[in-house]
Amino acid sequence: MRIRRFRAGDEPALLRVHFTAIHGIASRDYTPEQIEAWAPEDLDAELWAERVRGIDPFVVEHDDEIVGYADVQPSGYIDQFFVSGTHPRRGIGTLLMERIHEEAQALCLVELTSDVSRTAEPFFARHGFRMVERRFPVRRGVTIPKALMSKKLKHAG
Image (cartoon, rainbow, N blue to C red; front, side, top):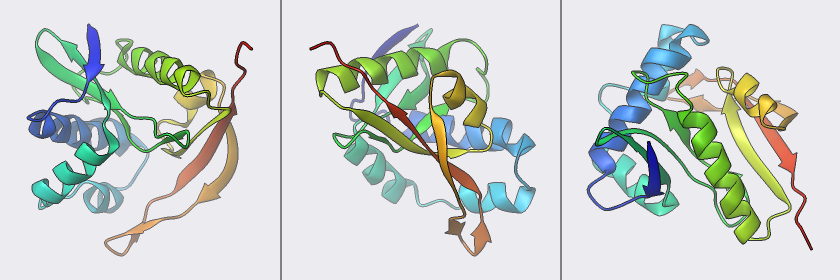
């Protein structure tokens, strides 16, 4: 596996990762109605691609296939963090989290935060994140519970 920065043209593969992560992995923690509201079949791919270009994520490739992606913003906010539903539990998430921490160090961040799905909460907790509050965002008229999680960072001075 290798990790690299996002490149133009990655958008369709990242959309597949996003879709399979939600429909294949998160579906065990959310209702079918919540899954469809979160990652609908009729998602506007161009609007989604524009958003992904804006977050400039890190991308994990395995055997020339994109299998995960995640970002960290200059504020320390992790906007998207997804591992392909066809490649769960293979160290992809850990590789992405390590890269996010390297970037946080380079940016001299003091805290990382993210709105995390029920499915991802245990993973983020294993990486030192703590629950701040429960949130209840609504998409397409459906509530999709998440948790705001944060991690204080220590930097070598």
